[in-house]
Amino acid sequence: MASHIVIATFGSLGDLHPYLALGAGLQVRGHTVTIATSSAHRARVEAAGLTWRRMRPEMPDDPGLEAEFMDPRTGSEILFRRLVAPAVADSYADLQEATRAADLLVSTPLSIAAPLLAETAGLPWISALLQPMGFFSAYDFPVLSGARRLTAALHPLGPLVGRPMRRLAREAAGPWSEPVRALRRTLGLPVPGPDPLFEGQHSPTLVLAMFSRLLAHPQPDWPPHAHVIGPLFWDEAAATGKPRPDLDRFLAAGPPPIVFTLGSAAVNAAGRFYAESLAAAMALGRRALFLVGAAPANLAQLPDPLPEGMLALPYVPHARVFAASAAIVHQAGSGTLAEALRAGRPMLAVPFGHDQPDNAARAKRLGVARVVPAARYTAAAAEHALRRLLMSAGAAERAAAVGRKVWAEDGVGRACSLIEAILQGDRRSGPK
Image (cartoon, rainbow, N blue to C red; front, top):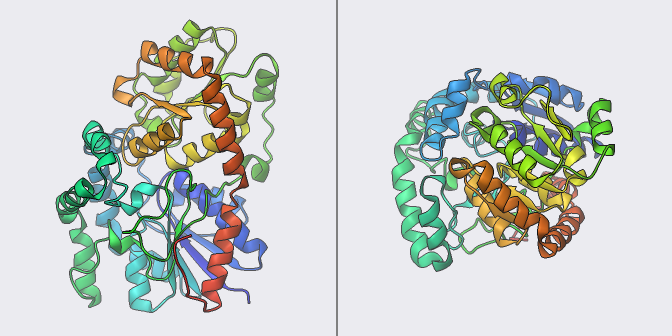
């Protein structure tokens, strides 16, 4: 039976594209899908053939603030306390309007009004997340951007250290959610209620873990109804059909290039990433493609004209170029990492903040990546890491093997089937 499903999401393109893929998959199965998100994503939602509804907060148009969001120590707190949490009442009102005729609500971690709406309206609700860090497991404790070296060193010790670390993290982040507790009081809901940064983000019915099982598998303290379904890929190039003859000519003109990208969020806090990357590519004698985003300062780091064998573009869908690369240098955001894994190419991860250090550490454990934190990224460091990657037959073989496995994961199909089971009243679930 056809249903109306509302997907609530907030964030950069990496937080939008998997849900466009999910929405398109559900729509193919006959359902009506609405994406509730900020106005910045309206054009992409509608180009995907889905219905858009506004859900605040809006994406900021302040490069300085966007750069603060990527600070490895304070970025997550600034993002949540200055942008997401203060807007929770507005988000609730917007989502209330968007779900008036809905049969099911799908929420993402930063759509913190969604669990409240589900609770007050009695609307069936499932949750989804894109990175293992979202479970904050004591058994698989994440590498935290504010204490990267310490948490990476403690990770092998398991729950003995993971439990107190999780407790400390929860206590430190407790004050961040006061606006959520205030809204709960206004709505007449029990206070304090589930913590929206921890157990409160997870649906009691179904949790879609939208990442590869190669990165993480269910742990004893995950919700028992969590399913690791694999990443969901949105083929933006095929959906928009925009020709790129300049890119096609470049790719055909020589050996596979190294692709340098910072996704759609860290690119706003690039620092000297592109200047150092150009110097590294020149030292290696390799062709390179730089995806520099819209910030003029990023393009200004590169000479005009660029040396032969180099190309800089504001934006290209990653799926279009990653598979044609020799190696990929990226920030280890969840969406970029998923595309890089699927491409089957060795990678150099340059994490900034949020989940990126943990994602990078997981890629390193797979044997497909080397890691240089953004604060230590220099031409010399990039050249050294890339030279070792490019000279390693083992790294190339492991990356190709991982790529084949990720290609075989049917994230969209599995998500749609699980959602339809909930719509049909089958609430039996367990970790898979």
